[in-house]
Length: 151
Image (cartoon, rainbow, N blue to C red; front, side, top):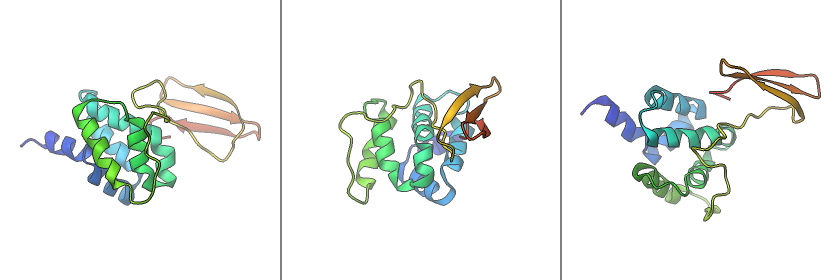
């Protein structure tokens, strides 16, 4: 069996995603998707990657939120591999959780790509640059340069 189908299956396996997130963090997990889905050829991988990217700010602090983030962001997706991943994530919640019945999180595949977080909470401006970076300004005279791919 060629390597790509094995890697694809791994990236769509909830247990592997949870283990990778716990061991290496969300940025390493997103880098794995970039290495495989970066060519844009697999819409299901791109969708799961988009859901993880949208959830990155939450998962960086609380990796245990992976089931709720995946279910909430992929709730109404009908692609077979995405729906199977979502169903496997539901029983993975090891503590009481509010399982979404309607989509309350920004859905994967929409216009929003990622949430940027930082200590300065009062942004006064944000400029997106053509090279994939952004510069934010805040009222405390802080400028930050962001890599939009990694947050």
